[in-house]
Image (cartoon, rainbow, N blue to C red; front, side):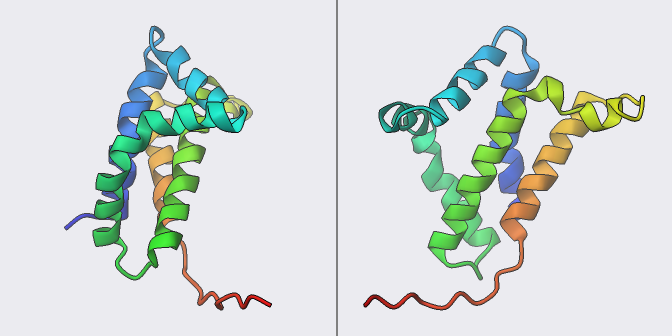
Length: 134
């Protein structure tokens, strides 16, 4: 059985490997910068990941059968963007621990990103009324 956490992990783990590798970290930052650029440049960042979306969406459909496809895809888009932005600034993620003069292992931070993505995917799904067009 596929879970939302499984899908979050499949998405986050390869990106975390980039974020933790000093020689490849800049690529993730570049992709995130493209996400904030013009529509043409945003399309480049989307194109880099587009081949993976159908399989991830199919897995999420199995993990979250109660979610309408547009809601599921929107949530995944939010989780994907949040995780990429967090991983692109990985060095700042430990700020809450540093503020308490504590340290935290990189693995803990990656796991917290996976938990955050999972929570976003699993969030409650209240009934959304259909829009009526005038």
